[in-house]
Image (cartoon, rainbow, N blue to C red; front, side, top):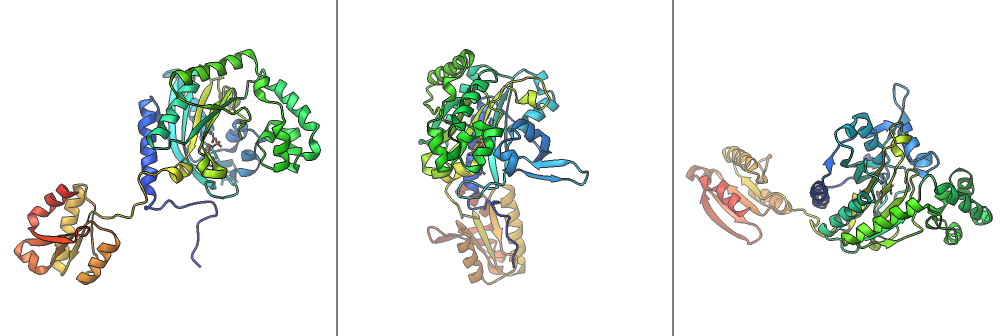
Length: 416
Ligand code: HAM
């Protein structure tokens, strides 16, 4: 039996790659013009990093991480997200000494042992953006404006920006107390997981998808009614700056996030066309994450986009199967060597040329060129070789013409 990929781990095939490249290229263009620099971080981190940042009592840390002991007996984890790793890198390399504000982005795979379905995988790719060292509400609005500009440039006009605030360390305990009180009165209606969460992390209950829990949650008190004056002021400014920069948003006062590090602003970009997994981006502010992983108390704000979900929506850069630009059908050993040489010359000029290695019949080679969807075929036999000429066939127009071998490279370059 042929060995298959691991469940929830997906191959991205060449036919889909154009959309991926389009999404990544656009993100790089937009983010770099907003002053962000790319960073690369390792796939593995010490498990402790995620436990201390994302939170011990979250679904990710409790049941979704790929954690193992390595040969030195250290507990390591395949990163389930990038924010904690980027914060660790920022602290480890003292990036704050260069300038108090660091704007970074990262593109790469994340790993979570979730139940796979459309738009949800166990290995998935994120483009993650973070501003470290800025507590000002302008930073919150700036990342959201930039995100929406990305969606604009990739042609996704239906993506909606939803925002909320979760308060801070000062005001959240009051809310937590109120919420716990309310939930305790509704214990019989809660699922087994939420009954447990009531003890460990009552805020997580707001994220539960079980129907009976949803009914309870619908009547639960809202964070926004419990936030302190400073948090209210911060949130007001965030909205004001979004308006100044003409970025539409909607308030979603029931939005909570699956990671514990958030303080104040949280947001999601959603596209209803995706159904259940409709969040194409999620993010927010985390003013104490750095402190929680052992560093100074440096604030931060950022988001992560799920590339698979965006690719599902992107129209441009449709699935492509066109390869190569030119197929050289050679007949006879000498012609094959000439084809080999010509193809190399074309490769150096940036033209995708392909040859036949096995020296099959002209018919078989033409069939292959057709299957590869090559735009042009150059037919090169021993006769042509002697006369220094070859036949160039346009496979779309179904016309052909003879030309001198010396002209081929320039002619293909001209047409490509
Ligand atoms: P998150 O909400 O866990 O946040 O993930 C962000 C985005 O990654 C989601 O909105 C979704 O598009 C995508 N995503 C998450 N899980 C999966 C999955 N299993 N399969 C496919 N796509 C998925 C974070 O990861 C935070 N680090 C975001 C952040 C950055 N907050 C501040 N800075």
